[in-house]
Amino acid sequence: MPDLEREIRNQLERVADEARLHPEHEAHTLRRIRRRRKNSAVLGSALALVFVGGLAALVVWQPPARDEVPRQDDRHPHQLQVETQTLAVGDQPIALALDDSSLWVTTGRDRALLRITDGRVERSFAGGGVALDVEDGRVWQTRGGDGGEPDGELTATNTRTGEVVQRVTFVGESPYGVDVAPEGVFVALNGGDLARVHPGGDEYMRISLGRGLTNVVAADGTVWVSQPTEGVVWRVVVKGGDYETRPIDLREQLDGQSCPQGSAAYRDLVWIADPCSASLWVLNGSGDVVERISDVGAKPADVAAGGRYVYVSSFRRDHVVTIIDQKTRQVLASAEAGEGPSSIVADATGAWVANSEEQSLTRITLP
Amino acid sequence: MESPTASDLYRAHAPGALRLAYLLTGEIESAHDLMQDAFVKMLARPHVLLRDEAFGAYLRVTIVNLSRSRWRRMRLEQRWARGLPQEPPPEADGYEQRDLLRRALQTLPERQRVAIVLRYFEDLTEQETADAMGTSVPAIKSLVQRGMETLRTHLKDERYA
Image (cartoon, rainbow over the protein chains, first blue to last red):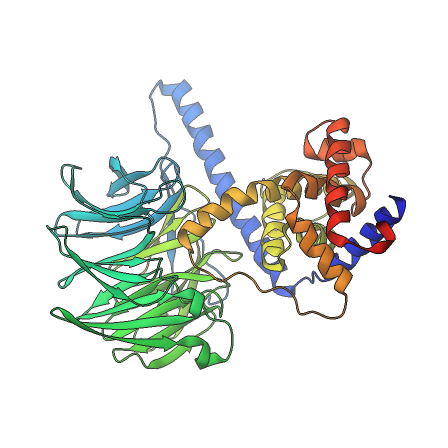
């Protein structure tokens, strides 16, 4: 045994020698520490105010759900002023969707569907979906098929009553991305099919693309489906009951790692976050690559577009949201979100991002 | 004496922290994330004064605890980033025995792996390892013994047959 111990010690040293520090990680780490300290200071002040105020006036005062600390990254300091606020939601947010009046959030631990209006959680329904979309008074969620629940399902919840008004079961399958379009509700099944569900009925058609499908976005009769395991984005043109498919191999474009994830279609362009190449792909409606934008964080996970801007969340390490001018495609600013920013949605004045490791959302507001 | 700054502590402890995190996770990307999370957790609280020599021990425990909660976080991540390809192993460079050990370490149950890394890489005593893992010395002895048996089987070197 002593020989084995000595050998194990030596080999552990050699394995550990493979780990090399990257110089930029120090700056990332220190920036996160500064932001956490600011947040802690604000929370402490709020609690102190509550305590003192309660003693003095015997008035019950609720601490604000939001902090008001401006948190802007210093990589693009002068191009765009960004204001950020944090909203605690009490559980790990997974996916987001916006309708005209509310923000919808699914959560991981309590498996809830929250409706947030004017910065406050108004109602909670049964949820826990991994992806969602909201359209015409219905919230569509995908869930299950991941071990705990062997069968996956797509459900539609009435936004007013909370009643589940439609349910489609995918036996033994794992549905992920969902997007609602005039042509139907499109669901990416991880097993390899794109499902097109008719709202109001159980019937649906399937389009076989390949294993490992994740995100889906539909616009103007074209559906874009991410297949990160192959480094491919599928362009699917739907015409009535017919369809045409075309794989767009992003690995060929850069001769390296690519794993397209979150996507957004906006004004004739499709934007695709790619954590493996740390970049944002921009495709035109035909599926040709227009540009690859770097400097969008270490692990871009999701992208959303609204107003003049495109927003990219970076899931790991730097925890930032990068803001891009959608016309010039220039990076204008990067705002620090909470821990684990993942799903992101945008409106005309800013964006919401789910901090999936911090039980909170970050609201980013632009001028 | 002036307290070290966050930057001072990072520069002093990051290399060792990264090596420990790498052995615990087996993935360089995850090791960087784990190390950064540990520093943020340790240093984010304002007005916390830590002596430099005590910081290393606290950081080690934080890394161990974070590595053990990493699996829960990975499950959450996989719900979001389902289908991401696995990180490729480092290029083979002739150190076959080292690659064997890296793979063998990852086959160990999590507590056995942590115990072996703390004992034989961090050179902690059994008592120190037990303290870092929040368990007893007999439990550490058992974990290390079982882990070493598994490693011996995996390595299959005639010197230990």
